[in-house]
Each structure stands twice: as C-alpha cells, then as structure tokens.
Image (cartoon, rainbow, N blue to C red; front, side):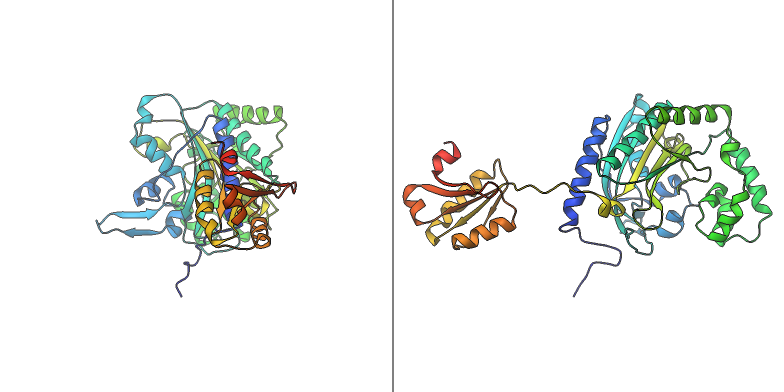
Length: 405
C-alpha cells in the first residue's frame, strides 16, 4: 500500500476545520490592517533562497528540497514564504512604483528535517509582508496584528523583542563577537561554521554547552547606533502605551540572515518546552539583495501545525439542509430540490431511500439544521416534510412555497 511520505500529512477532519478556521480569521484580521492576499509558487529557483535566507542558515545548508528539473534548472520547494513574496514584489516592479504594499499569505512550506510533534517536512505557515514603510510605528502595528490573532484564538504566549542593528552598527558588533569567538575553541561544529559565514547566528545555537559559553558574549543591544537605539526605544514605548507585555531578549537573532533592526518572537510553553510559535522582524535590505530598488520591509510568519492544538474552537452550530427520499419514486424530486437549494445553502443529499428514522439519524450526524424528506404523500401533494433539528419543530410545506417560486 502506498502511503504519504514521512513528514507529510493529509489534512482531514477535524484538523481541516481548525486550519480553515485559523486561516479565515487571520486573513480577516490582516485585511483589517490593510493587507491583501498573495499566493506565490511552491517551486522557485534555489538561488532565491540562497541569496535571501542565506547560505549560513540551516534551512539552506541542510533542509531544502532541492533538485534539478528536466530543463536543467536548479529549483527547490519553498522552505519559507518571505523570499517568494519579495521576488514577486520585484518582478511586478512594485519596488520602482513607489508607495507601500502589504501582503498576507498562507500555504505549505517544505523542509527536510526530522519530523516531530508540530513540526513536519510539509508544514503550513500564515505570514504577512509590508513594504515601503520605514516608520517604527509599522513595526508596532505588525506586532499588534500578530498579538490580535493569537489573542483571538485564545493562545497564551510571551513576546520577546530585540534589535539586530543596521548596516552601520552591525559590522563593528560582528567584529566584537568574532573576537570573542576566537577565544572559544569548545563550541559545536555548526557554530564554527557560522563564525565564518554569519557570526551572529551562533547566538541562536540550541546546544546547551554553547548557550552557556554565550552567556558572556557581547550583546548587540549594548552596541546599537543612535538611530537604532532611538527606534527600539520608540517601539517599546508604543507597546507600553498599548499595554503589551514583552521581554527584551538580547540573544534573539531569528533563524534567517535577512533580518535587521526589529526582531521579535512570540513563544509559548503550551506546546511542551517553551518554543517560538510565531516571529518576524525587519528586512530593510532584502529587496536590494534580490536586485530590486532599496525598499523597507517587515513581516512575520507563524507555523500553523504548531498552533492547531492550541486553537480554542467555537461551539459548532448546526447549518444547512439534509435531504432524503422515503421511497424510490422520490429520489428525482430530492435531487432537483437539492440542486435548487445549493444555490444559497449547504446541502447534504442522500442518494438512497431510507426510513424517516434513518434519515433523521444521518442528518444529526451531518450536524444539519434542517432535515427534509419526500415520500409518497409528499409527491402527491407536491410538497416536503421538514424538521428543524435545533428547536425540534416539524411541518409540511409545498415545494413551490418553500423555494419561493
């Protein structure tokens, strides 16, 4: 028997209901903030992610589904959403048009990593990307939007903040960090590799021994330039004014190379060990890195699978109609009635005659609001029998009156 590949999973009941509920309300909130939907291809040129995510990242170095297609192109399944949205932004020449653009997206991403609870090789993300806004109020707005989404679903969290500096203050900080690392031989192989490619990424290491060493490492928050310090102070002041609680985590660097200035994560201990459930930050030079006109950018993404079990679903209400025949002769009438109803309503049609008791039982299983049955008497009267399964009322009515003809 052929089964789904390891780390891939079918989205079926009841998880599909949670997924649709989650994406529906995240989309609604994003649209309230002025964002519009974008969908980018699952397959992109590998160079897109090497240049944006960065070759020092574990995603590019270890986890991409990369292959050569039949045309000889080096391609991969998208491992994250931001790079594809930036590529589309440049390809449509929005960078040259001026003004801001705001997008939200959701869908599958792919990373070849060890499957575990809440982390699959095919997983789904919801994310937003805002272009053209340099004001730190946009940083605050993005964080407030994400907070509103998590609050809507009743998900507990702690907000962690940091500033990664800019092209002025990051290089001297990086030199300080490299000097610190030169005196530490007992770090893991990943950190030794990162020291040469993107030193700040060592602070993201999960190795306990490395984490202990980095307790004494220089911090970017102590080395920010005046502009970055002012922006970070403004951000925390705005969040304070809205009563948003946060923790400044000076070792928060995020897992991708393109971030600068504001970086943030929402972490939760509701999925086991405390870990990130959503995060993002600024990437003011990413459009330029991908050959576009320099454009400010900020966004976030959250892994939907990691949040599925935490979503507090509303009580499911009965909705729509169940239609069933009580005799063979009524099957055509039931079919025609269901087609007419489906123009406006959700309808479940049973294609075989059954007893009234059996139809009522099936309608209850389908969580239908109304059960409609047509039998011999109803055929003679050109009518139908209907029961409201919520208030238990039942009555007969002509089909023409019911359809409003």
